[in-house]
Image (cartoon, rainbow, N blue to C red; front, side, top):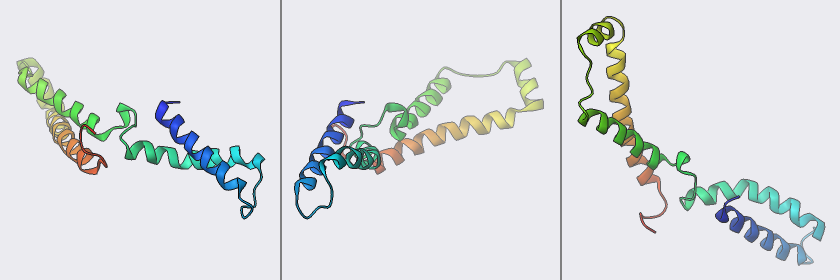
Length: 125
């Protein structure tokens, strides 16, 4: 459990404990933990996403940036096929390879933009 997850769960449990103390709430102290766990299970992922605390592999921005960097490095590295490879791929799958590399490069850039636009916080905050 990350420190952010623990902090969210602790706040939820504290809020449920306060609510249960009220006479108008039909719950007892034994209900605090199960209610808190159910609320945390549903709310914590939303809070972590909204505050950009999700793991890197769930970040659209990070995945888009990785795809864009890989495609760029391959391009700058002069990734090419020699004559024998070209003949094989032309006869078999060169169009598919070109399509896949183009989609990866385009998708990486689009994913990075989309992730930034969907972010709820400005960069660096």
